[in-house]
Image (cartoon, rainbow, N blue to C red; front, side, top):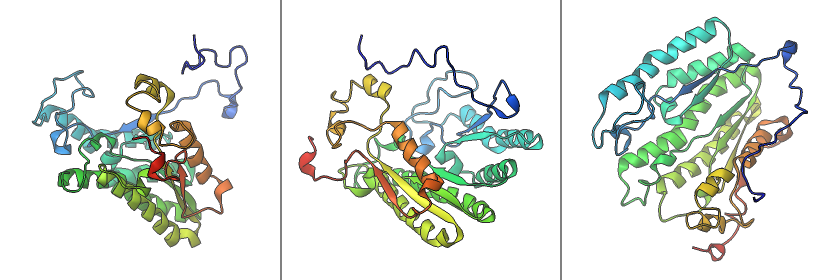
Length: 306
């Protein structure tokens, strides 16, 4: 047995905490809508094959190099009809919901984004915080240098990583202004601050997001809206690190050694930084990009073992 086992099998044991739910409630129920229609696998998105896992009829055989219209129609129904049916169901009953939205999907349906913002304001009396957290990671293998990368990959990466957050700001800022202010946090990347032999679109999009952060902060700072960004280094949770052969294994070693702290980042560390920038503790912070990268961008290439 080792002390690096990533799961907690003990928990609170015999002394669970009192959550103190409103009204002394014994059960808490959260409704979540997954909005991912328009971001599924399809050759229209540059994928090699059609969606095969997330379908209404279970596992489907991937159609390599061709569109799979029955699967596409399922996703189109969700975006064109299904979302709005759920929207009416919950809003008519004044039931708050959480939306897990995929950036590429939201970018394709701005009206749905506007409805989500409207519902938030209606349910909670206003909108205080927007966290734009998007990255077209699935395109990394196609995102090479500017000569070898196809133009569609470039456009798609910028659509998700830069246009998506812009549309989020566009939908949220009016609601924040009505409330007298708010906080926006964008997830950029350490890749915005260094060059690379590949990931040209990714690095450019994240650098653009840093610029967008400053632009929004400047344009709306005098009206109570703060806008900041976080720039993570390489972030992999503990279980995934072990599944990939460990932080010093063949697949992760070059990333691990590029961080001055000698390890990769953990998701909860990024979440804590986002929570800080969104809170009143950061009331005097705006237009900034907080690098949470373990020193990855603080040193010269001589520190990188690659």
